[in-house]
Structure formats: structure tokens, C-alpha cells
Amino acid sequence: MISIIIPAYNEEKSIKDTVQRVFFVCKNSFKEYEVIVVNDGSTDKTATVLESFKTSHLIILNRGFNRGYGASLKEGIEYAKGEVIAITDADGTYPIEKIPQLINDVEQGFSMSVAARKGRYKNTSLIKSVPKFLLDKVANVVAGQKISDINSGLRAFRKKDVIPFFNIISDKFSFTTTITLSYLSNGLSVSYIPIEYRKREGKSKVKARDGFDFVNLILRTIMYFNPLRIFAPVALFLMGIGVLKFVYDLFNEPYLNITPSVIFVFLSGLQILAIGMLADLIRTTRK
Image 1 (cartoon, one colour):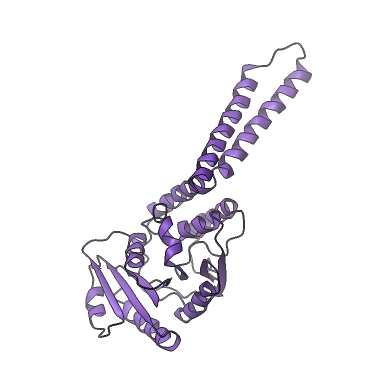
Image 2 (cartoon, rainbow, N blue to C red):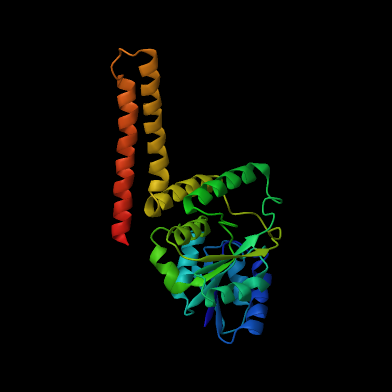
């Protein structure tokens, strides 16, 4: 059984075409499948459009109010009967025909397979592209490797692999970001399949405040899986500054005792390192 999950919020203009495309791919690729659409409190005609489909393969989960992109996906994942799950957006931007390839990668042994968008900044405004670019770089450092596409909404994974990370994965738009970091930080294998990315139908649901949530969630993920990636560089930097200041004072004022500023900076670095090592010990024990 293969489960395809589509979260939808006010997508009346694109949901019909998206669901039809998903059914076309499933009918030609899988023997057993289900398509789960989580209607996340839509106030337009999304529910009416979905009700026009007459097939037992379509499961519609209607929510009375908007809980968020990630919360919708989590609900769909928990409801899904399939061992392997693929997710895609309702806005028609992703090449759904790539789903069989993504699922094949998972069945061949990868923990997750991600559709990596080529030139994903070209149709994005400068004000959105710069933060995304910077956050991509931060995420690469966190994961310790290059991430081809950290927040692609088209991907496949096993249900049993993703459930344990629900407590750290976001209920909002950062779901895909935090699931990627969670997998990579925990040593799970991820494959990337290059895709072309179309311009979305309708208005984007991402708001400015989601950017702050995005940064917060990256920091939370670091702390949860790789605390030393933050604490160690900061600690070593401060301790290094302390040592350099001590050497400078020694050569310029040889009769001066160690200055309070040297002691403060060096001990601050040492304390931060100790906290990081304790957090890492807790992480290791938790595993």
C-alpha cells in the first residue's frame, strides 16, 4: 500500500487538477494506493471541489479550523495505511509524475527521497530569496553536508521512520525543513532527485512571521540533535580570544597580572563548552 498525502488550505483553484494528476500517476504505477487530502479549515470552495470526486481511493479529512501545514501532514501520516508515504502540495507546483521515482528510492533502501528543485530562487522575490539562501547555508552547517533542497514539499519516506520525530517536527510551514534536518542529524539516508518547479496557482500562504519560526526551529533542531555544532565553535572562539588577549597583555605589559577581561572571556568560553558537552551527553544517552 502506498499513501499519498496532500495538505490543502484555500486551494479551490488548483486542488482538482492536483488530485487528478495524482490519481493518473497512481493508477499507472501502483497496485494498491490511497490519496489522503487534509482540508485544513479552508474557507473557500476546496471542500466542495473535493466532494466531486467519486472514488474509494480518495480519503478527505476535513478540519474545522486551520491548524497549519505541518499539523495537516502529521494527521495524514497518522491516518495513512501505507508503509511508504509520499507528500505533495495542493498548489500544482510540483511534477507529481516524479512520485514513483521517489517511492522507488525509499523501497531501495533510502530513508527519505526528496524532489530537489532546480533554480528554486529564480521565481522568488529578492526579499524572500536572501533569507532562504542564508538559512540554507546554516542548515548545511547543522547537517554537516550539502542539502540540495531542505524544504521541498514533494518527498517520500517510511511511516515508521518519521513518526519518532513528530515531537521536533514543526506543525507549520517549516515541517519539511525540520524533517530534513531531523533525518540528516540522526544519520538517516536521504536521496535527491532534480526536478523543475512551476509557478504556484493562487496566493502563497507563507507569512513573514514564518521566517522567524523557521530560524527558531533550526536552532531547536541543532540543540536536539547536534548541540556541539553551536556550542563548540562559540566556546573555542571565546577561549581563543582570551588566549590572544593574554599574549597581547604579556608582551605589552609584562609586569601586569592576568586582566579580568581575559579571565572573563576565557571562562565564558569554557563554561559554554561545558554546557555543550553536557547537552551532547544527554543527546547520546537519549539514543
